[in-house]
Amino acid sequence: MITSISIDKNEILKYYKPMAVDTHKGIQGHALIIGGSYGKIGAVCLSSKAALKTGCGLVTAFVPKCGYEIVQTFIPEVMVLTDVKKKYISNISFEFQPNAIGIGPGIGQHEATQKTFLKFLKTNTIPLVIDADGLNILSQNKSWFLLFPSRTILTPHPKELERLIGEWTSEEEKFEKTISFSLQYNVIIVMKGAPTHVIDGETIYKNRTGNPALATAGSGDVLKGIITSLLAQGYEPLQAAILGVYLHGLTADIALPKTGFQSFIASDVIDNLGAAFLSLG
Image 1 (tube, one colour):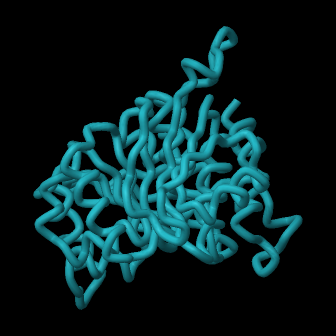
Image 2 (spheres, rainbow, N blue to C red; image 1 turned 45 degrees about the horizontal axis):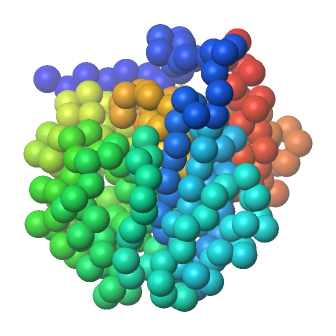
Image 3 (cartoon, rainbow, N blue to C red; image 1 turned 135 degrees about the vertical axis):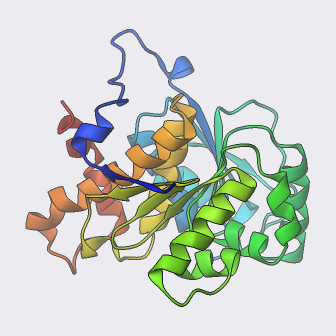
């Protein structure tokens, strides 16, 4: 039986955890953001900065060599690891234990990237968020769906969702297929859109924040960073997804009187995260 729940402030406050007064960066979560390729390092910059601004104690970005100076300059608070290749990721390798991993922003679909993504999926047991080209690679290799860690979070926009689950002819069929996919692979699906829905098996969560200002380049990269950060801080995957989409949408509602719809960009989501958190009390 399908259940529908609204994502509003009352729902969020059931599990929102204010930051403890005695916390420190070592226990505030360490997120790893894997992505980027030549010309698309900005996606990792946005995701990484969003992860920090959502409360993560430590954030590391794994990028091709061409992204090293870009990330270090854009957000010096983020640590950077680089691939051996200059323009794309070919060998995902790191020697620490992050609390959550977000993979996919700007990563491209180079053959070597696809091979290392498969190798990563075969061995990874860390809580995971997959976005953007990570999803597009998966849509071409559907046997890889079986490699997801339990409760992996997927964050597709409509076209990425269609590549994953197939075409639909009605909204009802879209939800039926997404629910079936969630149940089959034990994943949480953040259906980005207006409004955004979070699908957890037969439970549908409908977000009540946000507006058309969010229809802008990089908005999804920021959302991925927010959700990965919350996951790294110890929220359960469903809670991270729900709280993430709520905060993401709320920033646009807060900023709208200042920016209007047209002048709001993805960086404005990050800039208004503080106000969004303060509104939770």
